Amino acid sequence: MHPTSPIVLITGASAGFGQATARLLAAQGCHLILGARRVEKVQALADELAQAHGVRVFAGQVDTRDTASVNAFVEAGVKALGGLNVVVANAGLASGLHKLWEIPDEDLEAMLRTNVEGVVKTLRATLPHVRQSGWGHIFFIGSTAGHQTYEGGGVYCASKHGIKAMAHALRLELCGEPIRVTSIDPGMAETEFALVRLKDADKAKSLYQGLEALTANDVAECIRWSLALPEHINIDEMIVKCRDQASHTMAKVNRRSV
Ligand SMILES: NC(=O)c1ccc[n+]([C@@H]2O[C@H](COP(=O)([O-])OP(=O)(O)OC[C@H]3O[C@@H](n4cnc5c(N)ncnc54)[C@H](OP(=O)(O)O)[C@@H]3O)[C@@H](O)[C@H]2O)c1
Image 1 (cartoon, rainbow, N blue to C red):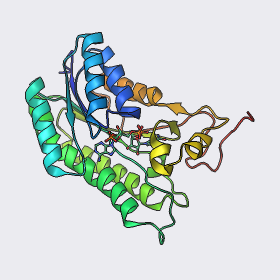
Image 2 (cartoon, protein in one colour):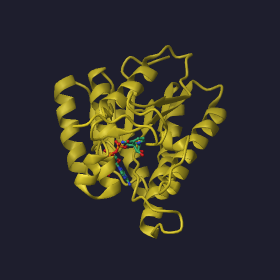
Image 3 (cartoon, protein in one colour):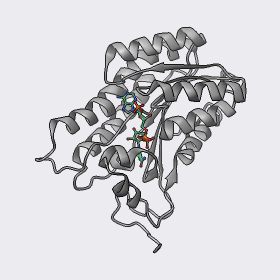
């Protein structure tokens, strides 16, 4: 049975989609377990949401690349809130834009360890609690990069194709249990993502110049909607792009002159 106030764990809650999802779900009455490396941002968000919506919010530091960190965060959050129903395995990043034969180890490891291993570690730690709760919903955050590839994006695309594979496998593994599995796969969305990837504020800004990109809130709304559907309905995969982005890559993007 769909609980009236589900307990939702979100990784990457210090910025972007994770932060926006926490805001939107707190406004719906969900209790939250929020984590990221920048714990002061997560703590400030937790304080704000608890006060504004009267929900219970646990804030913790987590580095999803690290097994001990993930396990400690999940255990502390579940203990504080008394259970877990929904997981938004959102923490992720792109690092650099390198051809496959040029990518430094630092970028290679950052993407594979966060986007693939980090998601596995998050789900490995949370799924026993979700299964025990008797009702659940797992959200992967994939990408249009999990459906197409582009030059300089080989490793990021591989990581997001990996998300697609894991979401499909998990849905097979959980079939028959009251747990839904959804992958939200956005195109261009204006968050800290491009700044983290390009490490240059001007370049990051110019990526979105002249077009109306998705916002973090738009992606959060996709999660809210999928979660609110009657429980026999499972959105497997939601590819969501702004109207100005016609192709999965940036090959066909409408830019108005500014
Ligand atoms: N924006 C886009 O265009 C876009 C499109 C498709 C998919 N996505 C995917 O959406 C997800 C969220 O991206 P976003 O756009 O919201 O980017 P963002 O604004 O940069 O937020 C990324 C979040 O992930 C957290 N994070 C990164 N590495 C982490 C780690 N090792 N441990 C814990 N938390 C970590 C960051 O927190 P800390 O730095 O504080 O740890 C931050 O809260 C990612 O998986 C990304 O690949 C983004």
